[in-house]
Length: 172
Image (cartoon, rainbow, N blue to C red; front, side, top):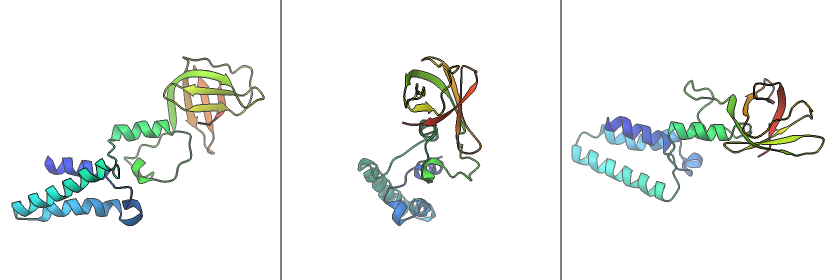
């Protein structure tokens, strides 16, 4: 149980400076090396040393610990942005990595933006999405359900209250 808890914490705990210098696997290997120590006094000293180092790094904000739920929330909030590949959000080739390809939420507010009859919709969880083309039949209002899907060529389509799809882009 203790071993599993340590592994779960350490997979998420990687110092920001380690990305440039040491791979995350090396950081975890340092703690896991404590497991191979036969003498219990030496093993405890190893765990204590590594736990203090982790606590100091967390206090200095060099390390941030995220659980799977927080990673999901962050991925949802960043849906629609082009981001650099960062392992903190999971490897896209990893079966456990949950790529966000659609977002179901509600509209908080709608305003005119960008001219030419374009609309900007602010979603309940944050983030602004702008229509790419004007359409008089597309008139969303705050409180309506919206589903935004990633299209095949990197575009996004929004359906408001189960209505027709409208092309949109993330603007904030």
